Amino acid sequence: MSTTQAWLEKGKTTAYFAAGQTLQDPDRSASGGRFLYSGNQSFGKTQGCVDAKYQEELYTAVQAEGSKHKDADAMKRVIVSYTDTVEKSAECTAGSGA
Image (cartoon, rainbow, N blue to C red; front, side, top):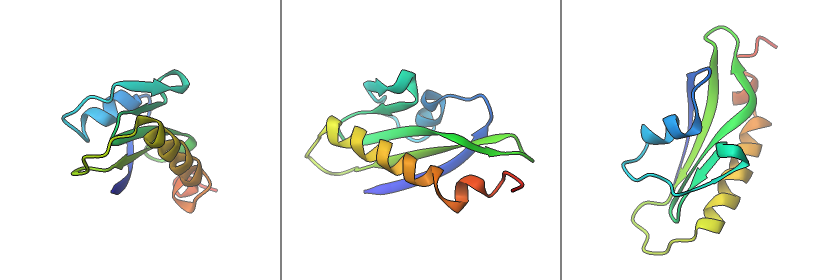
């Protein structure tokens, strides 16, 4: 299992971020497309994590490549929890100028 955090130009979408991270399109979404996920991968967009200098937003990913076990509901729970944790981290506020 791997986790990723990435800053992207402000105004992009979770789908845009996911397309750069995987060749397999996630087939489920939650929170109006803020979270995208499938049986072995999930992607999210943080809220409030904006780099003021570069005008970028922070995205998250959790991928469990190579496993034959697939559980979309578990991947949804993982990405929501991981994204929530990132939103409370120093990484989120690093570019805020605070």
